[in-house]
Image 1 (tube, rainbow, N blue to C red):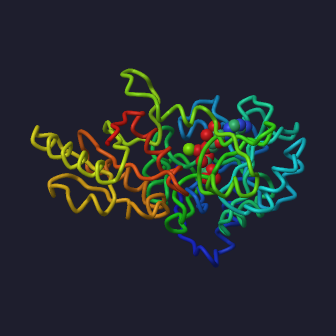
Image 2 (cartoon, rainbow, N blue to C red; image 1 turned 120 degrees about the horizontal axis):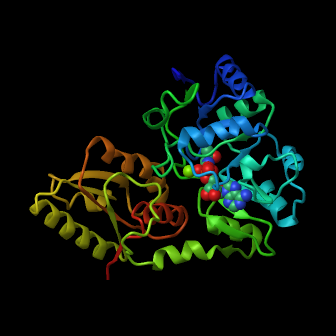
Image 3 (cartoon, rainbow, N blue to C red; image 1 turned 135 degrees about the vertical axis):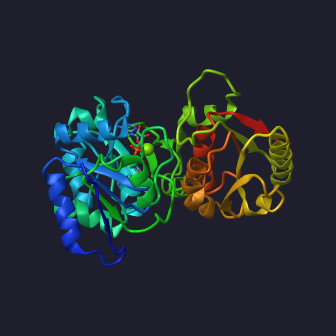
Length: 349
Ligand code: TXA
Ligand code: MG
C-alpha cells in the first residue's frame, strides 16, 4: 500500500482532506492523525476488523487495550455503562484535553478494543484536526500512538512515516504535537480513582479536582526495580541500551559527564539525552540530544520522543539519560524515561 501524506493547517484544517480521511476510516482503513499529545493510529472503533488492522500495523500484543477517541462529551454515554460523579467532574474540567478516563463499558464496545476487559478507555482530544476527523467519521476512533510497538511515540508526521509508511492509507501532518507525551490514563472504576499512566493532565491537576488519587503500584514500583538482566520492561525505547541518572541535578550532571567520557574513552559511540544545562558540559564527540531546560518539564515533554528517536539516525552503542524533578509534566517524562531505560537506573547523590 502506498501511504498518502497530507500536510494540513492546525488551526484551519482543509475539510476535504479530513473528509477523505474520514471515508477511509468508515471503510475500515487506517489513518494516522495528530493530537495535542502524540500522533495516533486511528481506525473505526466499532469495527473489530478495522481495529485488528491497528494491532497488525503496529505489531502490538493483542492483550493491550486501545483508547476510544470521541468528538463530543455526550458520546461517552453510548460507550460507558456508568459514569461516576468523579469521572464526570474530570471530564467537565479537562475535556477536551490530554485525559483518558477508564469506565465500565457497554456492549457497543467491541472486545478487540478492550482486549476483553469489562472496561473501556475514552478520551476527547483537544486537537481541532483530531476532533474534526472523528466528527466526520461519525464513529468513536480507536487509536494508540502511531509507532511500531515498543518504539518511542511519534510527535511528528515524519516519525509516523518512519514506522508506518506502507502500512496505513493516510498520514495527516499538522506539525509537531504541543504536549509531546501521551494522555493521562485514570481508572474511575475504583472507589478512589487510580492513576494508571501519568501524562498531559498532571497529578497535581487530578488532585485539584478529586482531592484523592491512588497511584497504580506498578508506577511506583518501576523506580525501585534495580537492573535485572533479562527482564523485559523496555518501552518507548531507542535501539541502543539506555541508563537513566536520577537524583539532584548537580550530582546527575557530574555522573553523566563522567559516564559519557568513560564510554567515549572505551571507543564506544555514545549518546546522551540531557538538559540544556548538562549538554554544555559534555564532550562534543558524544551524540547529544537536548530535551530543554531542566527547570521546564513541559519543554522536556515536548522534545522527549524526538530526542530518543534521534539515535535511530545516529546509531549509537550506548545512551545515558538525565532525569528531572517529578513535578508537573516531570512525572510523565520520568515514567517514559524509566521505561525507555528498561529500569536501568543509576541513583546519584
Ligand atoms: O495521548 C494518547 O493517549 C495517545 C493519543 C493518540 O490519543 N494514545 C495512546 O494510546 O497513547 P496507547 O494505545 O499508546 O496507550 C493507551 C494506554 C495503554 O497503556 C493501555 O494499556 C491503556 O491506555 N488502556 C487502554 N484501555 C484500557 C483499559 N480498559 N483499562 C486500563 N488501561 C487501558
Ligand atoms: Mg503507545
